[in-house]
Image (cartoon, rainbow, N blue to C red):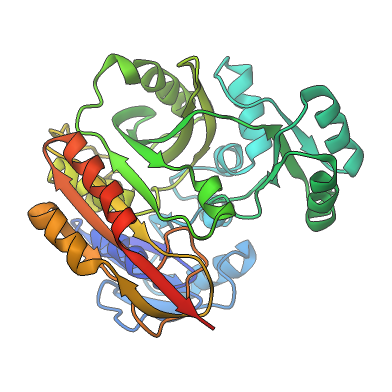
Length: 404
C-alpha cells in the first residue's frame, strides 16, 4: 500500500523540485504536491493542488484534505523552506502525522526561544534579548554595547537583518522593523570570527551524519555589500581537532532542541580565541547549493538521504568524504539587467577540469537580489587548498556587469 507523502512549497524552484524527485525515488510512496504556483513539469508528483498561501496553516490543511481525498490520510507532510516549518507542524498536528511537532518547530523557528533553550543547556551562542518595544533595544545596547544585530525572531537567510554600529543606525532599524508584542525582534551580540555551517542528518533523535562548510565572507556581509561575490567551501577533512568542539556542540543542539528525524543547517562562528559560538540553527536542509556540494563531496545522493530520514526514518550511511567541494556565486555592483559577463574564458583556462557544474549569469536577465547572485560555478578536487584557491581565483576573474 502506498504512503501519501505531501510535499509543500510556494514555488516550484529547481532546487525545490530536486527534493520532490528524491521523495519519488522511495519505495511505496505517492508524492502529492501543494504549491502556490503549479510546476511546469509535474512529473515528480502523483497529483498537484494549487492553493493561495501555503504559509497559512488553515489553508494548508484544506489543501491537504483536497489532495488526499479518496487516498486516505497523509503519512508525511514535508517542505524544505524555513518559513513553512510552523505551518507544516500545525498541519501534522491536525492530521496526527509523524514529524517535528509545533513545539519543536517553534524552538527552531523562533530565534529568541532557540537561544533561550540553548543557553539553558549551556550551549555557546550570542547574548540576546527579545525586543517588543524600542526601549528593549536601547536597554540591550546599554548593557551589551555596539555592534549588535537586529533581526526578526523568525527570520531566514540574513534577510531583514541589520548590523547596528551607532545610535542613528539603531533608530533607523527600529523605525523599519517596528517591534511589538505581535511582531517581536531579536537583538543579539554581534559575533565575529570565521563563519561556518554545520549540517546534520538525524534519525531517531540521534545525529547520524554531519558536514561542515566554510563561508568566504559571511552571508550577512554579502547581503550588506551587494557587489561581493562569495564562496562556500566544504573542506575534505572535517574529522580534525579544529572541528572537535563544534561537532560536540552541534550534536548537543540537535538533542536539546528535540529533533527526532530530519536534516538541519546550523551557522556557527570560530571566534578569534578559537572558541565556538552558534549563530542559529534551522530545521531544514541548507540552501546555497550545500546539499549538492555534500552529494559531490561524498559521491552519494544527499537529497535522497534527506528523503530517507524524513519519510523512512532511515540512514544509509556512513559515506566517505572523498573530495573537497565548493561553489563561487557570481554577481557584481550595480542594478538592472545583465549586460555582459567578463573573464569566463580566462577562468575556464585556470580551472580546467576542476569545474563540475556551472550556471553562468544570463545576459538580459534582471539582477537577482539573492545573496546567491546570478550564477555559480562548482569546483571539486581531493585537495582542499586546490579547491579554495580555484574558487577565490574565480571570483577575482569573473565580473558581472549591469545596466538600467
